[in-house]
Length: 356
Image (cartoon, rainbow, N blue to C red):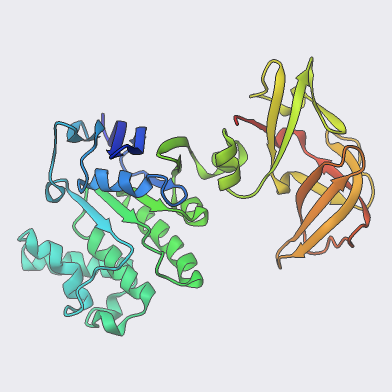
């Protein structure tokens, strides 16, 4: 099977399973992020892919060849991979061009090919005009571009990135997210990116693998993860949401103070019994008067909290019947005073049943 194939991968430290039964197939040229909180096992997984740690169980294969298994592993230097760390790890005594060319010299390429490759990759990362500068003369973002250039210039089979933007300030991090995405779109190198920042993962990734306590919770596109989370952890870790508990009775789900037809929600509703759903703040509309009937669920209530976030308002709405509370996002022009009466309309198509 082509690509990077991880089967039932596990790593135990003492009595603790840092990674357990991890399955993932990364297609050639795909960019996949391992996303999760600190201690969830994402860096341990990346280090097993790199060959720095041997697995306790399972295997890692690349294009049909086994790289890692409990019986033995291919050394890191023979895997044809490049890795970018949190620290830039570029040599201070070498110029930008010399840093980028270092791996090509180790591979004993001709001087002409080294010059051509270095020039091309520096052009791609927009660093050609700084080729003769030393790292101490560069900003953090420029140093990270050098690290990226050095990693891709050798044309690795797989590019591994271990929280490469964590040392940058907020503005540079946002800029470099798009830089990494742009470079991947150009080179199409199979890439595995470790981060705890959902924004980085959403911008850069073709798919995201969400991890929790060593387990893989869900693998999906950024849009699918946000719009159709399968578990409570994924729903809360990817963006913000409202959790509601209800119960299915016949063809409806009954919540505190209102009901929603099962047919309006769609797939994933259990046949009977308790139901937990996720409703994103953007799936609701706050208004001073009741909105048209349509298919939306309308609740009367009042605004209890408000926070102006610049691009949006963040409101806490409480319904009159049942006292349910909802976090709602509204445009800047939609201003509601505290305790002001209001109506909330919920789009039932964006109510997502989830597993606890």
